[in-house]
Image (cartoon, rainbow, N blue to C red; front, side, top):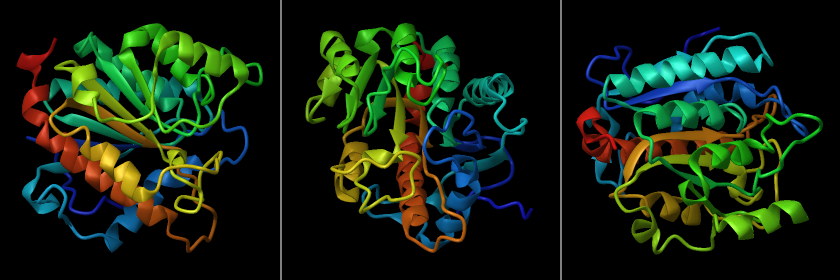
Length: 287
């Protein structure tokens, strides 16, 4: 397989601002498997983008951006995948860079959050998704893309989880989200809620409407436009974003559709967001 790199990325991790890592895991996919192929697809589609972002008035060529390639583990082997995620994220944070994971399914967020929390105990997880992902278990599994935020909130507490864009869940999940107070209907007061606490930003691409992003593991009608998702990313400017992920892009075999370009542009804008806040996520500023 030809080794692809994300647009503008370098091969050396020295002095990196942001490090991209592919996590090709979709072992608990329940409707449409294939998210394991997303990292390579995102890299391929990144070639259609400009390196310059008007919104951030910045260029990828001005950044020390590293694409570390994909983590290596047996397919569907969560314990090995989790171990690899931990080692990768810990190394990136220790080196003073900001990790961005390209999934893969949403369960990868759990291991990444657990690792980042070792460095930033007061971490806040900002979760953009069509689904609450607050089930206690799903199809007999308590570790699943459908239970990931239940496991996360058990680690970070209700004050450490903010959910936005959600429009699907069981009765029990909606009741739990109301009890925990995790759901936000707009991000206008995000800075007031978060303050100076470090932020882990997790974007499940099914937060977008299927008319915008059709190639996801569990598409859900009624979602955000790309503009609305982009505005949510921009709402995070000035926050102490210390890590991020983009998950649940599920490229169809042979698809020539634009979903890959959408995923690649979301990653690009995350790169600029994380690079802007790198000074605030340096080791000496850890909580």
